Length: 253
Image 1: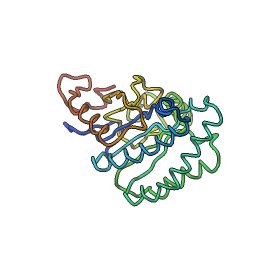
Image 2: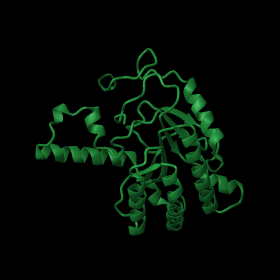
Image 3: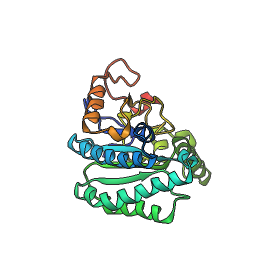
Image 4: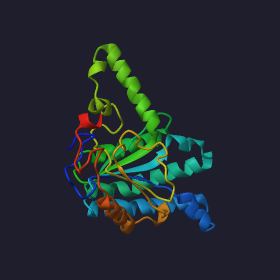
């Protein structure tokens, strides 16, 4: 497997696609429906997107499912979101496993309901040996919190004498992130027309191509994913250089 932070040479297709799934609430509001219905339709969009990613031979798909800031939402909505996660794992895990999808969760598991934490572990354990698409679910995740946790772990390792701070490089730092072992995203998509990263994969997206789409997440499908990939293919990825090529870690430092 390609090391975290590395890129394939001269590839015209993204190996790793990350998606900020935005617009469930607005989709529901436009139709006079409760927000929960928007979230339900968002789960259906996720199913379509996973199938499309498999067909397009994407190797990694990372989705922003529940951010660390989402705890600020009303308790009833948080309960609804957790309920949908329970349903998704129970209904879809067998199918994902049959399709050789490896499921991995990133984010903090502290403070999660015990049954939710158990479900995350169950999904990871069942699919850990699969070699198809890796579906990375950012759940209770925030990029600043991730980077801060990595810095704390590095400081503790240095205090124990297990790490020499002066020798730490980008690759060494990335090994302390939640995404250790996962290549950086090549393409980051945000739906709903909003144009910000919202505390998602800030370290990992340093050289990602950003595509902002007006489609609301419940309407997202394989055609929308293919459109974003076509936009990606049209970009000239220079990584700070003058020609399209993959940079070394030293060049990106």
